[in-house]
Length: 191
Image (tube, rainbow, N blue to C red):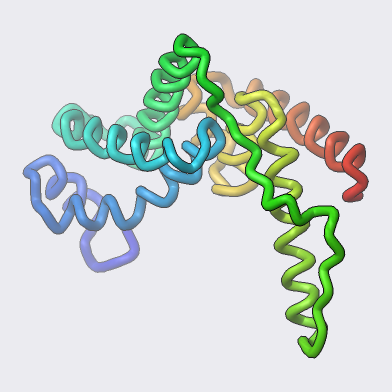
């Protein structure tokens, strides 16, 4: 934890139902949960995932033994919730993944009277959005690996614990996922 409350005290506060601990938990982990959920669902479903994960944390924190870090435990819960919801959506034959597009990709962006830094920032944002669209098209497992390692910067061992697979498998699958992403980016003409 990054304030004066120690990690152990924070866990104990969660277990005893302290309101400040749950506020802190939500503040620190809701954005991470939402970010991971976006690799599965469109933005409308992310809030549902965050609520369900927080509810499961609340119900299960007393059973948390500390065999893994709190963040690993929360990521594992998030993936379980996402998988459960995804299966529900799949059974309903709903479209789960959406690639949102503003439709402006083919329009020429004209930036007058702005300095080059602003123009560069806009270009990078557009590039980032296009890469995210390409990432959305990758298989679910590949998206998750890239998200956990390259965006959230988790270690290989943390990812192995979250996904419940060997660390070597994480490395080989991530290598393949990155290769597929790079190929898709090249095919889109972005490299």
